[in-house]
Image 1: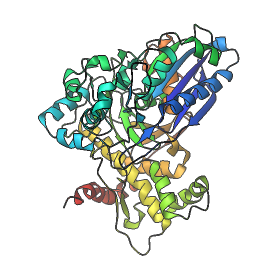
Image 2: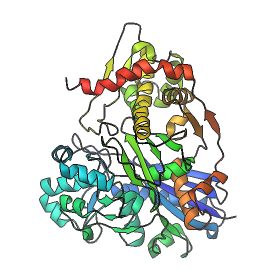
Image 3: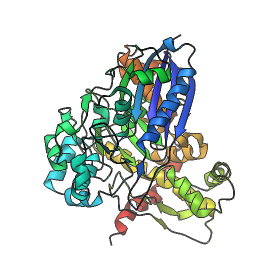
Image 4: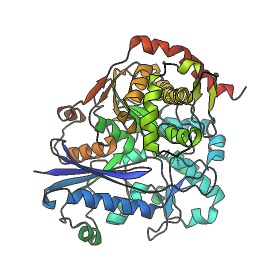
Length: 491
């Protein structure tokens, strides 16, 4: 039997999944690493810790396979929008700045609503926001001039891992399409974006299609992993694009719904979607397929905030969820008029405002802790509904959703999200969707998949949630109010 390994280099963990050629999951493993916040707005990670985690999960995945010669391909997924500077030897000059890093907010304010900002959004498909490596590099040029001048390359966490493994700087076009530096229609670096950042293309990695094979691993890593020298390693793609195919959302009208630490709604399209209000991103899966959608900062991370803020933290977090999610699920839809604007970590779609803040509205004496948690769960649904409706306003048909991320472990939250969105929600498997998508990308690179639609022969839907029309209608009053709360902050 032959095996595929998919690896997802995420924001909190690196995860690996081992599958058969029939997409049967035979092993999963993960390793975590901390985030560093040395001052407000900064969100960093140690790239060497990420590299260690990649080697750890890859080694465990390899040892889960009976016979290393039976591994036909290893493929990578990675979180979007990260950036770090390295010197000529490939040594880090900075930590890795993640998508959550907002230090470049002043750059965003100066660019966002200008003709240059609008042109860059149209070209790159990336909203002008501090998450963007475009803005991170421009900020470094202004605020860290000596370090900027010393930087040989500006790369993502995934590129750092690939360089460590192979000695080459390579970035897939899917990950590049989320940098704000890449023209999603010409499939090349944008000269206008490079000019704004103040760099040449020589300070970025070589572009490669996601199915391209990486150069042979360095001898030290082949020995460390005890792998045959001819084991195929594939560049792979971004976690967002691969979550779509990993969840099975590959046919027209099928969108991926993800709620992990953050959240997103994305759909594959053969045409670009450029929203006049700049609410949506327009990334790439590959050279034939666009990936329009929107991502939110405030997904599952809200549960951690709620736990730390609303409880005495005497019981473990997992025990808290086990006790209170059912209680929140038992509260009537609408939380008896309690509404939460969840922008406590700023927000991406649809407002793209790193300085945004949250609020509760409609608090009454009857509201319990369970009501507040219910309002938090509903708020995530309302945020995702705004993205879904923005896609539909741009003539993107969405008939059903394929769910992934930690929220699928909660039947209560799944029910709330399904009824708020008013769409059928399918769950195909328990494996991490992005890691599974990396495995599918490996299969495509190996010629086992001729098109993404072929995945439908491998995906087996585990559960299906259908919306209740009456409950969906009941949410409308709160949703109408919710949509006005963000602008209330400016009045």
